Length: 196
Image (cartoon, rainbow, N blue to C red; front, side, top):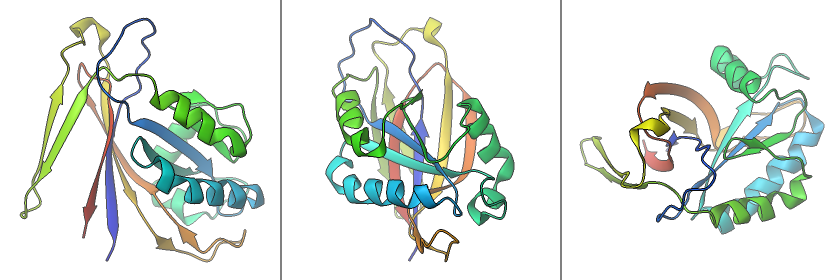
């Protein structure tokens, strides 16, 4: 059985507004199946995730270096390259929390994620699914104004993908597969786990 995670994400670049809702922090890891340093970073996040899953959504993007044949990059090169370029990632592993590149070793990422989770969110999201595969998303934006603008990104990730990589890894969790952007006046982060 494969698990797919749909992450509806938005990066909020507001500074002095107080928001009333709990935040789901977005962590984005950039890696490559040929990167020896990425193994330890991936393992760190794998071990950490059960403790932070109540307030964190993770997405792992794969870049085209050091190994140019990374199948996770090749699955969707245009969008992987776009996200990598957006953050100006020039080395892997690289970690981004809520749109900010983290300038700290992976052993300190948990502190950064926990600290960011303490910051309130401008929205609340409620997600319902039906047995027919329909998804209903309700968003409470009572503290947002139209002038804040933004884009809504829907990200689909696949979990527990088996692949024997040159760096020795064999299991790849929460790997990015597809991104859709829609114009909206919301900035948000949430996730929905669907099993197929």
